[in-house]
Image (cartoon, rainbow, N blue to C red; front, side, top):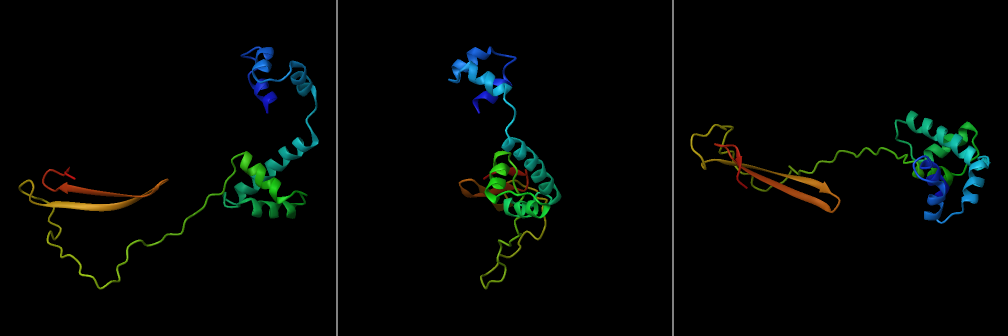
Length: 159
């Protein structure tokens, strides 16, 4: 709300200047400041503290439906959408634990490359033995494939 922004900065900037910049009247700002807090704002604040307690007790795993259910059991008369809105406005989110999933399929009939290196990682000459690896990295745009090739003599990345 615009009035809250003015109140946050009232020690740094003149109130009339901020009111003009935010297109509100100074009289409206002073009336808002002297007005008592609404019943809904008071109940939202107490409800928010109850939401935070339930969220912490659930080890941050409860979402709005579970928190709403717990609030009803505690005797709070509140709607599920209001709980969801308060959680969203104050950045209260669940921690989701993703189930581990194997990405390598080892049960196949395809030929497997032989181990010619046989764990002999010390090499006497450069450019004789190279080793590589491939990994997948999830990004916002999708999977990114990262492949690295090392010269085992110098341990330098060559590709």
